Length: 88
Image (cartoon, rainbow, N blue to C red; front, side, top):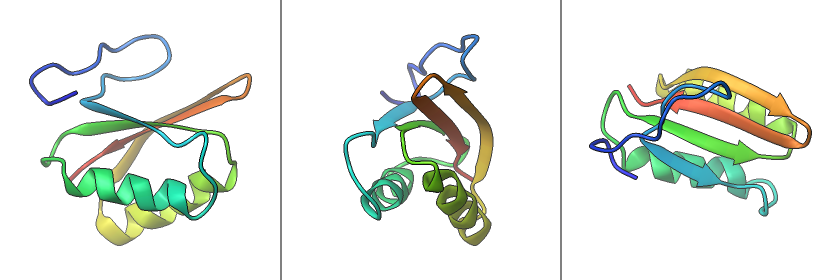
């Protein structure tokens, strides 16, 4: 997806410009893939990341503090977890 056709907002979370699924990879790849995806995004764009490992949220918060990007929303439903990160 690109910034010209953002994913629709819904009850599960805000609109996103891109999606990244890291549910099938183990640490440290989820955070590395997230960092790489954010590097290709413009300021203001939102990345929605699907993940399963609980420690990913802590790593994402640490990455956000280091980079200035914002975690704007998280959801956990059954075993599906999502985080929305806005690039600054």
